[in-house]
Length: 276
Image 1: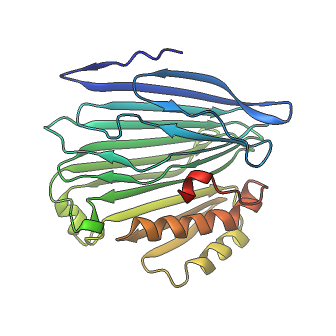
Image 2: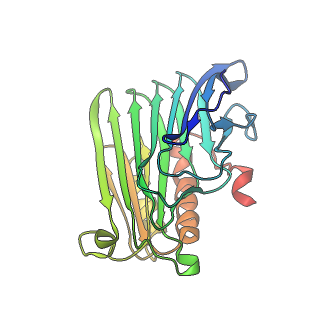
């Protein structure tokens, strides 16, 4: 493991984190960890027995223009891991350079991965690209979400300058299941073809899902404005558009708890950090 931080005045932080999960007697272990720069993980927790709960850390507390964060995780056959973060990730005002965060997740046959970070917050003037690539084997199980908050609506701050480029790609055995891309500027954020001025957008995906899972989620969101759920083959997609990360978080946790038994074959066991 290389703990050496890499930073220059011109390029910012260049950080990498590689994680590998594999089954061991009685539990899933973090068998591979390689890090460079300010990305790290806490010691794994086992609040539900075999499943490995892991907290992903970014010690600087924020991302600025010129920073590049590259995160890779792989779940080997027979493993089950849940990864979350202790708090929001903040993308700050840029002097002109773009900040990059790339996440590459691979889930092997008969493996389960839950990728459930807390929200990303984009301050006015942030210039950022977030790209997530999820590669599933035929028998892989996955639940994940991403929440983007443009500006800080809780204090009345809007995303009145900057750029945010969001990309989400999901494939099974090389075949695309979902290809999402949304590039936002203040004009597009407020336009009818963008987010209609609503600062919080989020996506939850889960597979393999059934019609019963879809109906369960739709019942949960029946009274929630600006939400929708659909089934693409066996990929469940839940969308949120609104003005509250707290509302979104509660809704997604409810949906996760409802579908986890059928998707992951485990009862809900929320990470302790979600209650702090």
